[in-house]
Image (cartoon, rainbow, N blue to C red; front, side):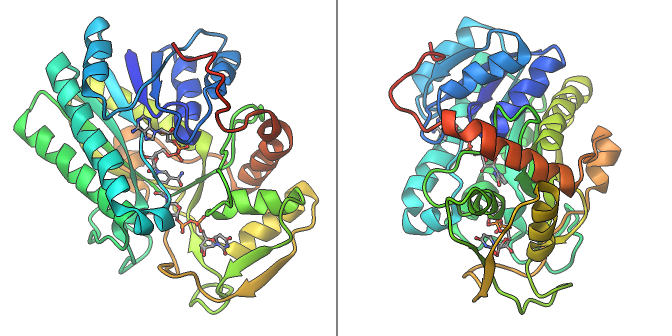
Length: 346
Ligand code: NAD
Ligand code: WQD
């Protein structure tokens, strides 16, 4: 298949590009690099041994998207392009509505204009808000607790309406739980700008001595050890699910919504202990008050993805921790945020 990856230079998109190219698909990356470096594309090329076409382009630029999609035939689009910081979305909701929702509308219009009939969409477990029960099935009540979450829910609904209106159009709505880790080469991984919001990148920076200690948000949650429980999944497992979803859409022409997680809840303390043990490093931490908006336990029921896609997460927490640390030590220093060099972009 010829696949357009919007936001393909980002953390998850770059891993998906490697997996898709490895399965023999042709991939083209579109990214405005608001949260990634064009150098990532060079690394994807290095890992796949293939030239990857890349365009520095904003998905809200309908003219440029339509020109690209009419110049070559794409079988499908994978839509990773979004702003994703929960705290920032509370401060700048309009920027999130514009980038995420307007970007998705423009993309859907361009796909329609150019006859591209399959979409894989990066949704999030954030659409479940504070879940009534765990593990969470796809049928659970949807509720949003912040503007970022609202954009994901609205985007899911927009895509569902488009599928309903056009039986020839199908979409895979993938609800990611907590992606962590990196490609085992240590060449690509997550590069948060500024202070990381998420646990694993913060842990990596503490282990590297870039930050004093980890602050664990709450030791009094009703969980196994009082710290928050999440469903961490390896980004390579997640990347593989995109290839499975694309192949499902192409063969069945049916839409689907699935959770992507391991189905295992892991506490902050368990993750910290595993990371320190696997990487033989010290991880000083203190327990502080709960973070606003956090919930006790979020983990997936991943049975539907297994049944429909034949997908299940294969890599364990120890592998996630080792691969995240390898990326922290080997990859990060030479893959900073954009500095004006745009070698890989056309
Ligand atoms: P990321 O920021 O690393 O990647 C997103 C990419 O999209 C970046 O390269 C960014 O430059 C690009 N982008 C953003 N807005 C754009 C626009 N208007 N036009 C073109 N490019 C644009 O994030 P990620 O972690 O790889 O997340 C990918 C997707 O998965 C996002 O939609 C995110 O909401 C979703 N998601 C992420 C997580 C997570 O924890 N990482 C969890 C659930 C869902
Ligand atoms: C995990 C656990 C924290 C940092 C967020 C978004 C969600 C999704 C994934 C995109 C929690 C604890 C964290 C720290 C800590 N993104 N923690 N100290 O909150 O499950 O989900 O990212 O869709 O929408 O909300 O992930 O990694 O921030 O936190 O103790 O410095 O680690 O309290 O229990 P979260 P996270």
